[in-house]
Length: 462
Length: 105
View 1: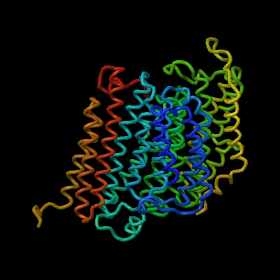
View 2 (view 1 turned 90 degrees about the vertical axis):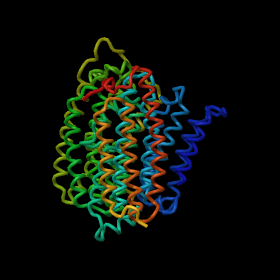
View 3 (view 1 turned 30 degrees about the horizontal axis):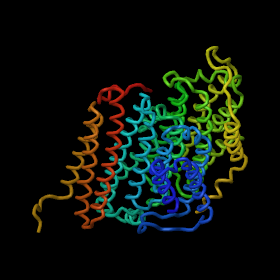
View 4 (view 1 turned 120 degrees about the horizontal axis):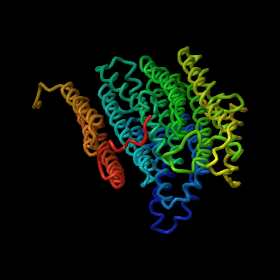
């Protein structure tokens, strides 16, 4: 709740800051606000709070996810805040990011479907603006329009599902719904229809196959800081809110609905990575690999319970950090017109700037799941959880997907190290100390998480 | 007093599903962005109708309050949508979504 007030307050302040003349300190206020959120969560950790007449409950699950989301936001600001700060609309960006964090916090702590819907919309509406924030760029326009269309469609589907769930159970509260589902429902067909529609809407937001087709276009066209925010934090919010729904309503695996999720998970791990292997644009490649990673996160949702929550938390942290690092490098290398971006731009990067090449290698190896880095344990935890619950198919598909992903990650790395750069590119890419510090920090954190995988899992103890 | 005793909840459900499907198909097949926005509104209004029908069936007002939230959010959403459409129109001079084909596969 404190997090809601802080982010909402910063958003409001940022909107009026140009008029009242304190626009210079706004980015500082945003950073301080994020740190206050982190601090308050550490102090109140483990205590339960209820807000808005039991519509939002701050429990262990939501606290752990809000804490990691705030930590990731702080890392994101650390890495990309400067790029945002150079823009003339920086205070509007701060307002929009703060408001979308409000929505994210609501999605992580809802116990009522009204709050889920409101949180989803508060998260999405600022993002439609942020995606289209390069007003003269045709790709940015296109991706904003596509994202808006898909988002509005998905929220319509979600509302239809919520309406049917209400029709079947007579309540929007997840705890009451959970007790109702045990008994015989008056209208079981409404419940089934509602569940399927709600799962489809969650799948839209997570970007899993077969509702993934918007993701590569939107990620490609959006400005880099917005893309990385969407691909890491927003994906975490979407997956965690789906997790919370299944946790509160079914308290574990959800029978036939789990089977539906399983199908989507297997498809996204395979289709996402196969499509990723044939991409030439690095942003699209990362978007498709993100679809594969969303499939992995979905395994954690299927397994559910404490085991799944730990796996999901670890996976989302490691994936987000790898993505931050990859996009940080991407942002430094792809400085020319965005219609001609390709993997070829990374040829011989180690000769142009070894720091960037090393960072990209760490990020890609972590995503691929190579042992000393965090990504290995992320995949291991998820697959172990699936194995313990007897989902052999998921384990098999996960391993196969990782194997395909390994091909294009390694192809990328080999072209960075063993080729010579084209003659027409800038021979060296300058970096200042700040950039090196950001890359060293994220890279070392990934290594640290790989060496001490228990660092994250102490956060959740149900 | 029941004015229409023969109307059951299934009538509302079927009407809502039909309206929702008209909206969803409209979003998929129409090429004019403004018509697509109207179709999205139709989908949301189908949901509103269903909510009110179920609210009457269960005899409580929760869903009717939800309908107000949906209306408010739909208004906010359409504001953003029209702003994005204006941006596209300024650059491309058309509201036909077939011009948005810079990115594929």
